[in-house]
Length: 126
Image 1: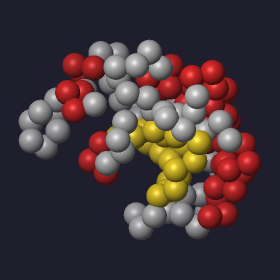
Image 2: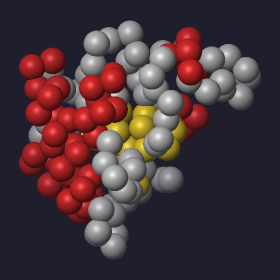
Image 3: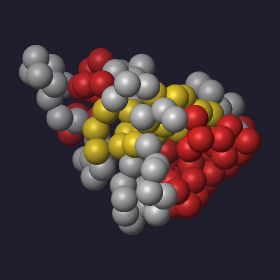
Image 4: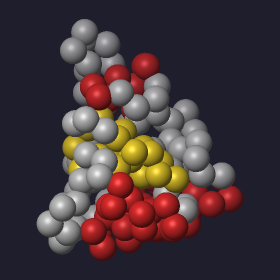
């Protein structure tokens, strides 16, 4: 991927412009770009956006940046954006290429996070 564009998931105007930007990937940000009061609405908008753009022939890859595992929001983030198909990718806090994963992701307990290349549990880096 050459370019990634972060879009606050609670901003309908920016979401609407996302497809026209030409970015290779759109990251719908549920973390620090969204206030605590708007988290629920942002999840609903992100899910609706993923579903509405699923049939687009020129849709870039969609990623969702969730809140950190030490916050009370991350499980609601995952549940809130999960769709039947196509499933979006998920970027955990401090998005890095190796920290992006495809759903389904075993997220019931942080200790179930897959080990990274160096053998360290990914959840210990969040």
